[in-house]
Length: 189
Image (tube, rainbow, N blue to C red):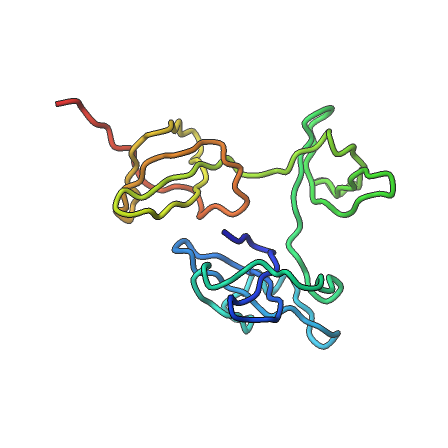
């Protein structure tokens, strides 16, 4: 599935688009990437995706963009977050790569610092994959704070959907959100 900030195209299209938002039901909001300096794609477009002259359809209606790279001077792409796995704890937004291959981050406190790539990992939410019991629909959710989820747990969402937990620690970049619901406990007959 696509994630926010991905460059995509309509399945039958030939023009690049940027993913602004993905609804819980898999509906994707995207806007055409700008090819000139007339109207830039900015953070505002991500925050106001409904008012950004965006197109909305199911995520299966889009394909990964396979054409020329888009101009990021005119098209704002959501940045990736990283955190340290060696040394003092730090986290921030990826800015660039140096000529020696090191990664430059703007830390949460505003400082800019350079790290070796093997000292960092992408800062992704703690996610798990579920499969609906009624069909083959599968998606990823964030683990609720303090919850202990195990493979093969049966969950029922607040909206009444029943899921079976298939995988843990999926490190998905674009989960549907924090799972809201309950675990079903079963007894052997």
